[in-house]
Length: 173
Image (tube, rainbow, N blue to C red; front, side, top):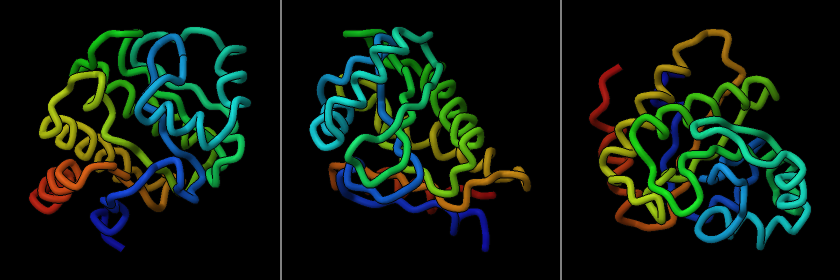
């Protein structure tokens, strides 16, 4: 299986994914408000927010893991790409993507689903997001010792899905 076969771009609701871990586009306060975080809280239940409250705030670019409540996933990886009411930068996107993959490895996950981190309320460019996230995932998957067999980019909007799919097809590995 080639590296490109390990990455799937699909349109859908990440909160419905049956994978080992889903990534939440979080803020540093770990408050599950709107967008991906809101969907995770609505479908997963309040236990996820309660676990986040016990953790408290985390640093920009960091990632932490909670249970997934009533979701089909086993874990939620909360990737802090922005401060509350802030914006996502390329540096914070790079850090959250890398740190999410590191957390996934710590939990020996085989399947992980990412949203387009920061492209909603974080205000980050969809084109640049696709480039940054896919490049980092490819770099991570090159490690022969990775536990990850499949990375899903689960994108709510058809247009965002097309941007990620176009970039994935153009990537040379």
